Image (tube, rainbow, N blue to C red; front, side, top):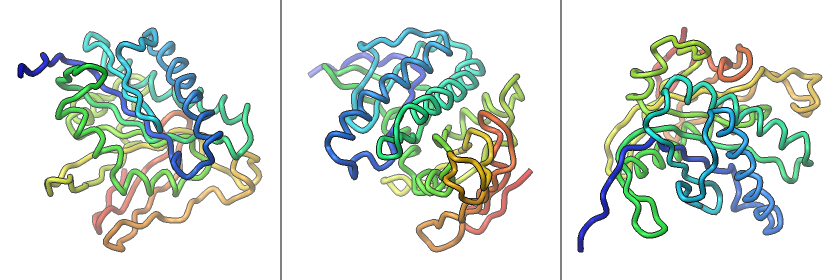
Length: 245
């Protein structure tokens, strides 16, 4: 058997929070909704939605994007586009149909095998987006639409470049262990404005979410002190190490 050829792509992975816990009718609506959100966000990036470059995951999707895109433009506009589209979705639906996403961006070699997209790049991105620290960051920011994560390579190669609209101080580092027991570093940000007690979207809750907990019991503190589109996360204590700007 000859393995399919691999090609370089930007890969976006989007997972809907708690999709499998929803009633079937809600899951169907969210499945359609995530396609609408992705289509809107890609328009902002300047890319047409192409079914041929999408992998359906039921509770989310994989999207392959051309490697010719400008990495800073892609990162900036993807975050802004997704956050805006999710805000639109929230205004149009009641809480039962609220959609929040864990989103990751990576670049690397990917192969197409029939209807499936495969490769180490996808496997590593899935583990990054599924990390406990990422899940807890989203749960701890109830007002937010999503948490956005990148691997260490994209943080050092793109985020740290201080490109227009990208502030590295808004990204928090975290270490996680892969299924092969390898420790990796990722960086996360929680886009959107801080919640306020009188904000209807926050349900009247305080603007400071409770600290999420890591699996070993140590606290992970995410402080929400910023402005729109990824400037809300300023520091964290992850596995006993304090990070901040």
